[in-house]
Image 1: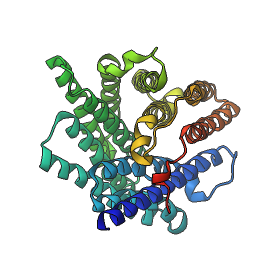
Image 2: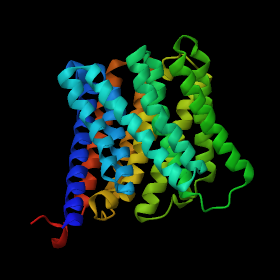
Image 3: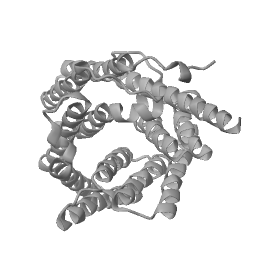
Image 4: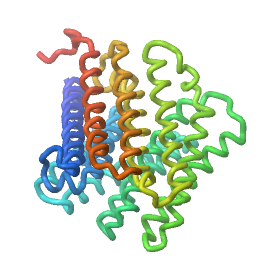
Length: 365
């Protein structure tokens, strides 16, 4: 009876966290569209739509994935706190949301410390832990000195290092050259050190931004060279879908880094964070969803070619965004914003349609 009640509570917590993450995503999307006068949204959602996307949506989902893997009741507090940051932001203001996201970030770091103390620290765990540290670091920078560049860099570092660490974890059983293993750690270490520098010393953080983009470019090149999944580009099924998503995402990360290093301060370079968050991160979401959903929903989605459509829509919209940014065409930027949101929502609809009916043994009585 106790085990059954525990499982029921975990399923309820998982559903609540997923609902909060979806709410944070919708709030972030509406806030982004309202900046182009395309959709009415609360002022807090418009001003902090980036924080809603990074911490309320992605932070909740990533912490939820870790909580499901660890299966410890206390770990569900982390995604719940992260998800509650969105309603707190809209109802009580940024101070309340900062407390929720800051506590959730500290709890997320504690989850990695617990895993490291029990199982030892591996290279991929160290990189994921570094990404976890960027979560509370970014919230602290936002609450302490409010430097938008530092907060943006911390949010990108949280997601990029977490994803890179996960990809390295999947390749841990492959024999890699010593130079490749060392290069991965050096690239991740450079990105993490640059983020700490930018958040702690924002007044002297201009070189830290360049170092961050250098580390990001190195990570993108490493993944394109050594991630074995990318070799399945032409395969069918979910394996080929994941390979295409991951490969295109790494190319977007590399493009954002090269653009920021080659033409810093140019109109197109100002779109680099969106290339990372929309191009790299959402491509990884599109690619990892068929892998993560069975663990969360306990059902395997059926493969459908429609799952690739949002990937191409997002890519095309980012090209339009870059052109509109460079040419100063607001209508192009509006069209790109609508296409960004359409790609994300279309993927959610496609994956929901691909989920098979729940078996009778899993349906609530």
